[in-house]
Length: 250
Image 1 (spheres, rainbow, N blue to C red):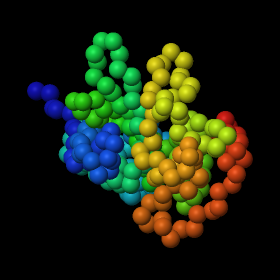
Image 2: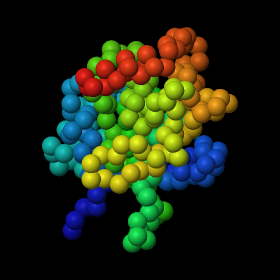
Image 3: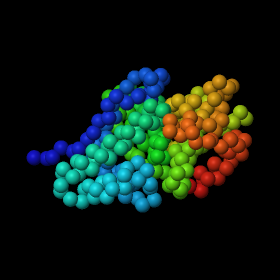
Image 4: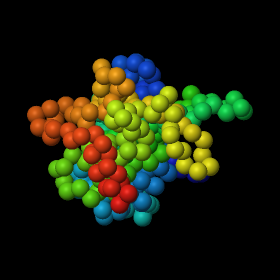
């Protein structure tokens, strides 16, 4: 008899697909063992990724050796602890919210409309969730290289936010703004153009009270960071050029 694979379901999360997010609809996100194994073996095991920002250091060794033995109870306990940490970080992000929503255009074959959620976690990790009208599932979670190079205590989430802005926002005479009509300007070769939405614009640092909704370099801080002074923003063009150099070297 085959032992069923482990899975966890995070219920009652704010749904970023709802225009009223985070105060609109709610959703459930599933995390499966195969995805956990991918995250652990490719990312948690990577010495450069600062997973002790999300999990206690003593929880990392049992997680890394999850699939090295046959003790199903130990594996289930380690995975449950990992799931709880990921769920807490995802819930905090979705309630803030600080999410980039990528919608694939509906094709001619009437396939259900699909979304990819890119969650900027407070610890600086990027969580990716795929969704359709039937379900939402975690696909991966990792610390990008440009984030890993920052020393601890440097608010890594800001670096991740800047990297996503460089990729998905648009530079105009008014500065950095959301893409015109919300569509990805330069899709990857061979892939369809995705519709992009920053959830929410104000949280990302865009000024919705100004013409063109420009980015002003002051994203909304996490609740515990309101007492941390925010440096004055530089000129937008200069900021973009500096960030471009960093991004190209990543």
